[in-house]
Image 1 (spheres, rainbow, N blue to C red):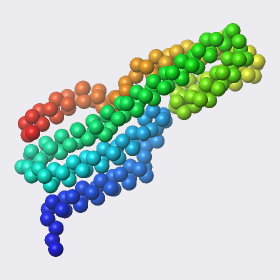
Image 2 (cartoon, rainbow, N blue to C red; image 1 turned 30 degrees about the horizontal axis):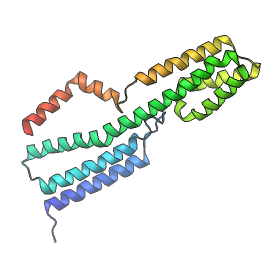
Image 3 (tube, rainbow, N blue to C red; image 1 turned 135 degrees about the horizontal axis):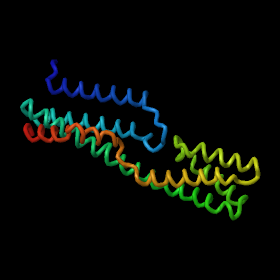
Image 4 (tube, rainbow, N blue to C red; image 1 turned 90 degrees about the horizontal axis):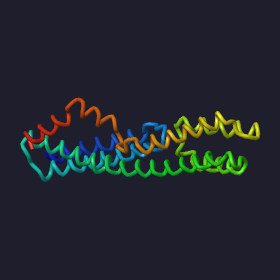
Length: 208
């Protein structure tokens, strides 16, 4: 029994989807920060929904080639926004809010350290330990470790190192609070600079 072109198309879509998901899962990109470590999972979700959209187009929306191509672009854009952009925005925003709160706790202990060195050094160590996963990949991580280690070694804190650590902590709080929550901020710059977003809009207007 011969397969129809629709059935062949669906089989190819499912095979491509499965292969892409398996390859992405096996060779998932290593992220230096847990902030973006979940993006590969969202990419798999995006591929799955994009493939489901293609199958729906093949079965339910018979279109001329150019119209069909425009629907594929719509499918790509819609699944990207729903499966990657929006979930990633909320995940990254939540991560950054948690990170800022953690950094503010570290800064509080640093500010109060001159008034009670031993108590606040121990509190600083505890909060550092609680923030290890958040600090991963940040330059403050090593600086904070060095400050704590040096302070324990001399039984006091060095004012210059203390001031540097406090300054870096404050700078990181400001940076985290202001940085883009978009999963791919460089993509926005590329689209804006190259005019691709305008060309895409014109394409969809012409063939949609």
